[in-house]
Picture 1 (cartoon, rainbow, N blue to C red):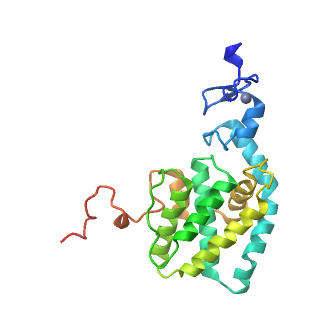
Picture 2 (cartoon, protein in one colour):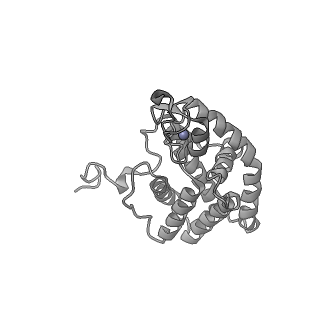
Picture 3 (cartoon, helix red, strand yellow):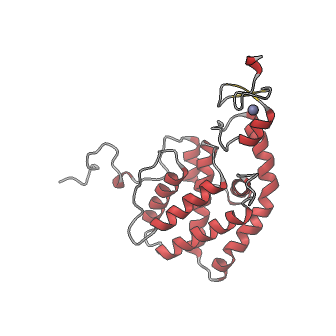
Length: 229
Ligand SMILES: [Zn+2]
């Protein structure tokens, strides 16, 4: 009967109400594609339950990988790099709390792009969808560099590399669990790092900007007040 066919594959029997696809999805398709190719809303019960379980499961391993990747930075007391790496992780947390869909490969790609753009000049805006993780990281990085004043680009690059290394350690080489490292990372923020007040505020009011001091990117097209004349 058509009405009980899985909205994802059109073959299996749909048994779960999928709020993203507006229909019944099979448990297998839900399990395999949840937050990977399906834009799960963060409040879907299937997403939440599964996510909670996976975060708990992968956080110890992520924490080990993280410790190993950060070890040289701790040894050298590279506090700027460590702080920036933590911040990037927290920004990723906020991003995925609002929009769960994403994979380890997405995060690594986004970090790679941010790394490329890190230079003596502030990170340049690129043409990306407004909700894209890469864009979120770009904007957050730019804001952070502004705020931190003199964060050395090399220190920033080391932070990106260390975080990427931790993620890559957990990435499933067979691709069966495309979110494994992400689960560990998100759990790590939840259980260990926490969120600074401004990111907490952004989570509660996503319309607020975590990232862009308005002065850099006037949305109206007119110069920010106070700069003209
Ligand atoms: Zn299906």
